[in-house]
Length: 141
Image (tube, rainbow, N blue to C red; front, side, top):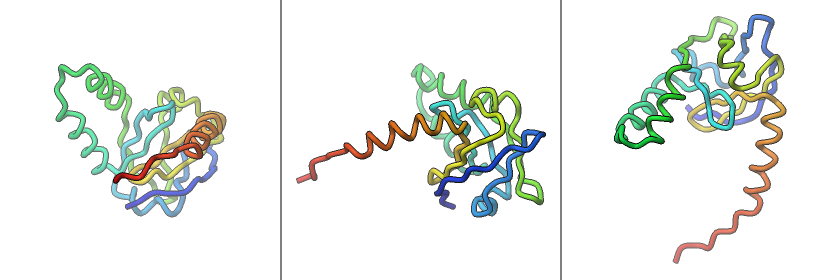
């Protein structure tokens, strides 16, 4: 499973998102929606989410950033299974965190999918593209 591409669907009146067709098979067995970084939502295939949780839990609990990460990632997370039309419900508390109303940007980011408010995505991607354009690393000897 490898997610890539950018899509611009709309949520329906019940807060449901129709997943892009090319993402559906990889998410059909179950997924987890959680708070993402930069105020987006992250949709993980359930096994990938569980691997991420295990990775984070392997860090010492005396490490404050680890505690913070788990405290943001887990309490608001929701499990879901897409319906026959490929729809998932985005809970209101997660929509509020991401500032999502009706229009969304759905991006494939390798092992996961992100859901963004269009303006937040535009602001973030403008800065990220500029930073990407200026990367100039020296080759390793």
